[in-house]
Length: 74
Image 1 (cartoon, helix red, strand yellow):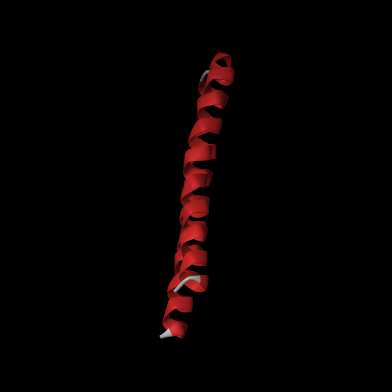
Image 2: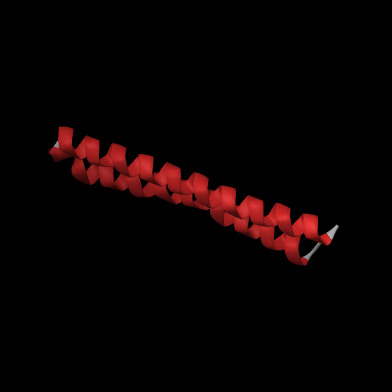
């Protein structure tokens, strides 16, 4: 039973890391495209980029917290 919890926790952390890396790469690419199209909007786009990056980054942080709870508390 403990081994299944460890496998589930590691799978959760791995999928969170992969999905957030895909999301961040897509977000960065769209940011570069936006800057290339309209350079004068760079300050506004950077602000929005940082806000969305923080939201995308929150998902794996929550997943790590849940995984650590699964490993140590269950």
